[in-house]
Length: 121
Image (cartoon, rainbow, N blue to C red):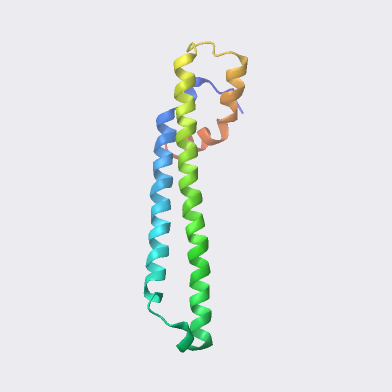
């Protein structure tokens, strides 16, 4: 991996990726709601074992889908926080020599930033 400089880390790219994660989280939440809506009026006590099993399966999917949506939204928030940190560092560092400590901090962002940069150039 090549050294990462402040110029390589663009907070706008991180914020754009955060927005994509928010949109995906919303889509997951929407699917979970649409999946659960038809089951809201189903009375499993009168519908037999098969209906009960179906409702329980969809209920579990709903739980997992809700957790997935929450996780995706949390990732978006983490990307926004990282972008805030990048902006903060960029305003406090000279453009040509950030210093060893800050260079190490920026290197820790490399996997996220390179994925954002390569995937959405």
